[in-house]
Length: 434
Image (cartoon, rainbow, N blue to C red; front, side, top):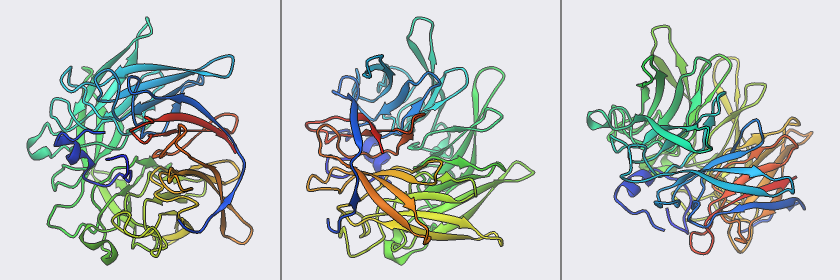
């Protein structure tokens, strides 16, 4: 990933493994919002946060940076609010190539358990060199201890997975679930489960392996986004590639899938939607579920194919989509918004939804001549359509290229990160009040 390209397409993990860790058109409506930069990264405390933030019950924020830190291989950080309205930044852990088996290059965000422990993934490193699932435990003196719960590529041919770019989520029994971009039985990614053992270790099982290099990958390939559970215990996710679509050539435009647990302990995958370019393409984001069981997400390209030409694998500036379940078990896709450039392009982060049913998100690019990205709002209207409002256009001062989704605070403010241009800016944490 360079300072000029920010779509997280498959190949990032392989690119890193090779040792290369270096550093529009029609306008949408705009709104004046209260934007505030909470923290600016300087490299020593992290560089390029790609992850969505999380809150703890005390109101502290946590996240990861892809590189930077003491060894320049990424960090876990914490932001603590002050009484005067400011925030203090703390590096909880700096990843290292050879220091231990904890891995390095964290891309995804974190998960917090009820005891205050943090869980996440590192895309590379570990005992098996294919990345790790790690845990950070707070100590009484304020320090944190990192431990690797599992190291990928521990099995022959990386059958257990390789390169987790997605984070992990818990089920009600305390098991962790996530995805690896590559590896698995067929080489193009896995959905995995980690189960805690009585001796303190964690056992990994692969729930599903995506297609092989010579297959048509109709069921998807290269999952890089977080999973989500429904109330019945089914898992939903997206793949960056795969699916049968001629517009996206041999790679496919990506799919939305569902994994259903079976009585014998196995899981069955079902493709809910295959993107075709005009309704979205490439690197679909993590999904969210509303109270009615509808799924929402974004794709980094596709949509209006006459715009954002030759910027990524497929033309188009990206879309926001909705998937609605039908009574017969099928799903219907609705494109809620097609980006045009000046209202944003390359929406790589996921969405959040407020109590009124409004959707909020970011685009990595577009928005102005700076091409630094936007924060947007989509509001449902009485006619059944959706209206987009650009809440903020970034100008690299210091915010630039928000690759992650937003987090909703208790007072209605939105919190997020920007990755920076990696030349003069190295990432930031912001708050915006719509």
